[in-house]
Length: 490
Ligand code: HEM
Image (spheres, helix red, strand yellow):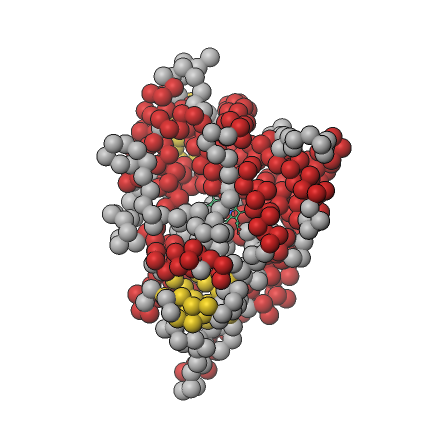
């Protein structure tokens, strides 16, 4: 229905455009396509599989920096590493804002500034990031890193016993089990709480988180055409419902017990305690801030689970890669014990598989917004302009990579076999809004993947279609065939 409506608008506007010799003038001097009335240049994005593919195509016409109007929003797209660095690092302070999409407000209690990833930059955001950093960016030598390892390994035993319940050699939906494991790793690590996989409420909330993750990774016309809202009412209601149910679960099943047992004079037991103590000590922190922060970080488990699913999709389609992971894990563990996080240093190939997955998946960097009048490469950029960082081009262009279309983890290995990442590879972005969860992603996804291939041969029934430039796979996605490997484990 919405598609038909949009189609009609596009056709009508195409007519208007042809009949109207005077084109709409762009408000800056950056080259770019002339916008149509009302929809701007949205029609140009529709011609490609993803908006980022469209940006790459347009950069070939207009150059590495071009401007584009989407709906009535002025946007700038930067397409090479130097320009991306200029926006994210050199002028990070000028580009600290985020888009004001209606969907983002719906997901965070009516105000996107409740969200760590979708808020504009502020002193409060600086504080929230610094509380999170200690727990969500654990350093290799820290107690938190040890704790990530213990939590991950304990959960993987439960995960394996869940996998054992699946029918052997038949296509199975393993995504809910992978997500359940990730969710428990996150809630155990951040909240000292975990849930049985058969807990229906837990299953439902894990599903809602996954629905939201899928949702947040899609682009919608309403983001740039807010007057379409009446047609998206049902959709918006669904988002608010999922978000509300998640909040209730976190309050009832996690925060309530923490508050009842918290000793404000003792060191925090976990991230949840740290947030509650901050609420008490910092007059600028409000209840909503800490609850949404906790929710944001627990929600990070969906990113890890989806990354693991995408890695599996690529590995299965490249059987040589699966073989090399198995050989590496067997050699490091000598087939005698379970793999753990401290094996990562000795398993560079498996780590490289995850970097290659991140390259191929090429998850978009959340758009930034200019918070002041500024410039990029001398081009004037007005306050409020939305800036897209085209990391799709950085990750998939032949200018940066040899055989970019192929899945080749070895591209991340030096001749001596160490993991090396080129400077232009920034899957977690860079600068003041860089991803805070990246270390947790690397830790948990590594142990899950290594454990899976240590214990199972993984195959697929049909062909897997992975959407380019997207870290999410649909909540109901491809099924896998798991065959237990011969194992000496006790
Ligand atoms: C494969 C998984 C992930 C990828 C590829 C990823 C990537 C990114 C990217 C590209 C950004 C935008 C940075 C920018 O705007 O410059 C970001 C922001 C963020 N990420 Fe991640 N992320 C992942 C998982 C996680 C997880 C698991 C967590 C939490 C535990 C997390 C927490 C955050 C937060 C809080 C921000 C917002 C930071 C800010 O705006 O100040 N991410 N991430």
